[in-house]
Length: 161
Image (tube, rainbow, N blue to C red; front, top):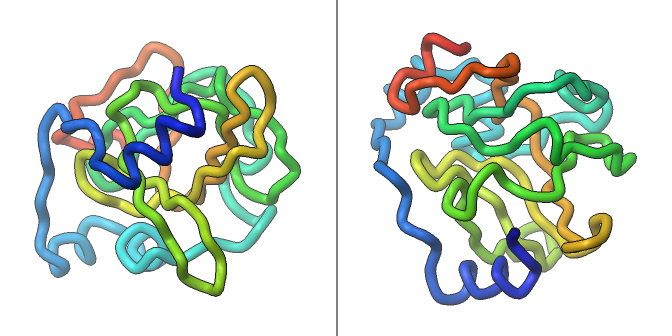
């Protein structure tokens, strides 16, 4: 389980190595993603609060990256943070995400990204529930919901979109 000090350490000194990397040109990303997905994941945008696909979804399964299909979160770690975006307490694995300091918009935050393809997901903060206190506030546009038992091939996200 990750703790806030782990997130700070990763953002400051380096993230875990991903299992593999997926690199695409910006043109390939534009063809692969919808305009909204591109704006959120590649341009670090934010979708509208409460008007997104997974804000109020609590069914079993997993959430994968829309860019590469890597499993990022389990539905069992999702909770109602009343933030307007899907919120999770932990990623699916220690190396699923990467972190960076984000001082944009006159705020000091920690950005959460897919560790395989660098898609912007949202932000993580230390105001979540016990025992670890993490809240991953994630854009629905950066996620694909997988039904229980489905584990995609991380290099073929087209099959799950």
